[in-house]
Image 1 (spheres, helix red, strand yellow):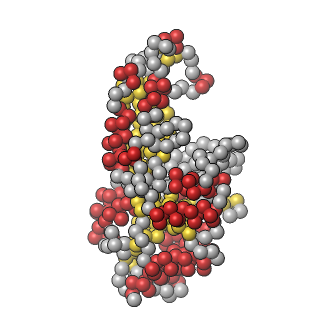
Image 2 (tube, helix red, strand yellow; image 1 turned 60 degrees about the vertical axis):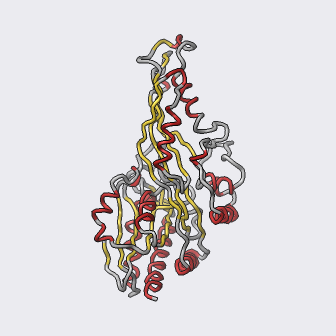
Image 3 (cartoon, one colour; image 1 turned 90 degrees about the vertical axis):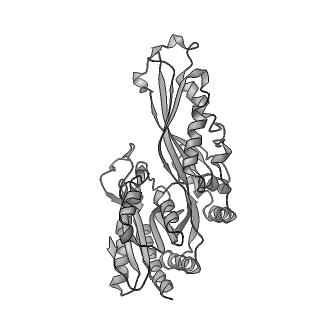
Amino acid sequence: MEVPGAGGGTVLLYGHVDKQPEMTGWAEGLGPWTPVRRGDRLYGRGGADDGYAAFAALTAIEALEAQGVPHARCVVLIEACEESGSVDLPAHVDALAGRLGTPDFVVCLDSGCGDYARLWGTTSLRGVVSGELAVEVLTEGVHSGASGIVPSSFRVLRRVLSRLEDEATGAILPPELHAAIPPARLAQARAVAAALGDEVWSRFPFVPGMRPAAADPVELLLASTWRPALAVTGADGLPALADAGNVLRPRTALKLSLRLPPTVDAARATARLKELLEADPPYGARVTFTPASQSAGWEAPPMRDWLGASVDAASRACFGQPAMYQGTGGSIPFMAMLGARFPEAQFLITGVLGPESNAHGPNEFLHVPTGVRVTACVAHVLADHFRAASA
């Protein structure tokens, strides 16, 4: 979508409309495809990640025009493949290069907020490598009495994973998958921890008695934004409990999702991961790692004075609190792409994914008042951008 503007400059506003699978576990009366409003929460799949973005971008622009406030030319780009790694986006950006022009300011509406009390800016995004790790030990299943002769495919897989992750601490072992944390990002993490305290971890639906991975909120923030971390997001070769018999299974496979620090090269990490997992397989088992997707992380360039002042003023005007900044543990592949293509551009990465909003899980919701205020903040910053570009 293109909206003509006054003066020079181009603002690119970004979001996406595709969603993760619907998942199970939705509460009574809620569902992935049925919008339900309860108080300030609008429940439904993809409302907060990231269906609101197109509406917020257009509403912010329309609000300025309704009040006669000038803005630069705006291009609204909404993609439909972000949750799959934006694999087709580069081709579209190449095809649309002439219409996109050279944006000098990028607004991304696909990120999170530490709370619903202020505007939050995202300063870094982690990269990700995903793929399937499979271990085969037999050509077919056999009686489990063969255990002790035939190594379990699950045990072999567990040994291979221990090359990547310390199972006692969750630390990722290969040093090349780590990156130095810039002092400015460490200072931001300390400021966020001071503001949120235990809310850094208490927002998540832990089972009773469960503790977070560390006690220090600063350490938790850094672990989820600037350190690599492994998650197993799927499994194959394991029958349902009701169907499981006394059979030594021939194969076990896991879907791995390895989050990478913002400045680690995703392609090199993928190659290293494959080399690490497949080398010298225990007992000569057939071990394969098949990469599925990879996305680069991203670190925001320093904010120019006008943008820092504008973001803070917008937050104070719309929320009554100063803005805050933090890294996030997720990925937005388009940001790394834009940063490489438009190195002089300024970025405002923000969003509505706050406490309990549960993107990618059941009972996802959009906190409506925050959506309204974030939209108003975008309008505020668009107006300031025009004034700064015209100065």
